[in-house]
Image (tube, rainbow, N blue to C red; front, side):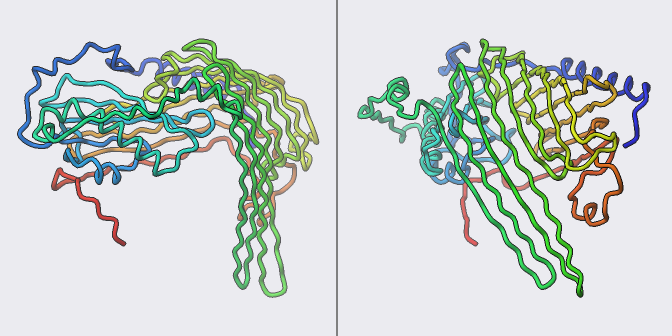
Length: 437
């Protein structure tokens, strides 16, 4: 590792502060209410009736679009949101125990301009994929009615109500024998055999989670072992790696904008020369927007500080076989989901207290934007300024470890980027579903 100098430290600090200010300066634009009842009602009487089916643009996060096209046939589906009468923007997030909560934003365009509202759909973790998509489709059907009633298809729609299910969410919670705890056990094995090469891998995990509006408790254990054997003439090379992690998180909600918690971690990773590391990290977080809107937009500031003990497999380049450290970090994260696309940006800086030059600054951003009709741009960029590789072993790294990526190498930076464009043209309609072959 190349040691840092004061100029490098000041440059990294300035870079981090500049990016933090840049995040705060990002124009968030005019926002609509997160719930339909908070927005002024649209004047549906002034909407122009259509002499054709309404055109819908599906902008879905984790939804089965083919299922919607097959089962909701009273609208036409288009490939370009600018050709649509209804833009269905759907975002989702995980709920306690592995369920998923969807927020559907129905945005009227053209003849339906001014009609906009939201619906929520919650799929419990016990639902199969088919049950989840059926419930999602029924909620979409309900949300399209105010629009479709102004089209020829409106005369052929009917509404029904099932009053046989009297179970309320509160009653379900009271009768829950597991008290909202959800457990998961998993494992897998992999084997690959060739004449001169053999690969073996085994991994397993155990997890427990309990999530409510007030508390979030998560516990997880994961372990992985991998062995590669290479044979050439009379020579045999064996290379192995192992990773074991035990994580525990306790988080308390402190109102619509604040959260606090503590994380405990114990891990062993051969890739970073660590036989055992134990870390305890209290944290506090502030979200500029209410957490109830986190699937649409969030701007969070998260501060963490805590001690860590490390026991290394080999003596490090700093002459340490084990050591006690204290680290702090600050993370700024911006996440936006909008009709024009989405963007995610984060900046994080961290350092150890015993030597302020031993730290790291990481910047990541990813976006997807529709520029004009049919033309979209997408990309991501990640850059890290690295000065905290305290775990690097002394001595030379073998060629086998380098080629097989069994040992992390010294570096001062890491950059990863990708960018792309997509352009579509032709028919604007996209109603047919054909999954043959």
